[in-house]
Length: 160
Ligand SMILES: NC(=O)c1ccc[n+]([C@@H]2O[C@H](COP(=O)([O-])OP(=O)(O)OC[C@H]3O[C@@H](n4cnc5c(N)ncnc54)[C@H](OP(=O)(O)O)[C@@H]3O)[C@@H](O)[C@H]2O)c1
Image (cartoon, rainbow, N blue to C red):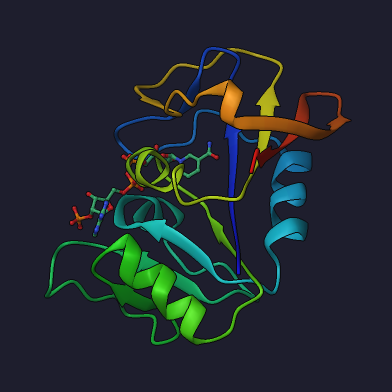
């Protein structure tokens, strides 16, 4: 099973605000996210889910929380209690690929598990406290890039 991280990062490393807000709304980048993840399980932290406010359509939404009594009104959403549990669940379901979609706390723990990172680097800086974690560039290689007006997509693959 391929584990992919997908993220959009401002030029200064910011990915979001602590109050949950996304500091920007770039339609084309959102379309890239949708097209890339559609049909695959998406795994996210509880705070990111609350920012979204509702499940992403056409994808098995998996939320991780340490709160054993956490529940949501959406019956199609799966709530699990660790990242390992979520990844193991997807393996057990024979998923070909899963996407880790944030936020900061989840990315920090997921980098060591991921095979691939699909990073949209925005062509502007943003205000916010949540940043994408530092990763060691010598463990990853860029296998493709795709330029867009307001962002550039870098696909990183883990060096085996
Ligand atoms: N730019 C992007 O591409 C992008 C993508 C996604 C999100 N974001 C932004 O990122 C921000 C949210 O990130 P964040 O770091 O604050 O929060 P987060 O990573 O979305 O969620 C953190 C929560 O996940 C749960 N969690 C974390 N590790 C866990 C583990 N090992 N086992 C079980 N549960 C675990 C905990 O929930 P409990 O507290 O309930 O236990 C924790 O409080 C928002 O501003 C959002 O807009 C940006």
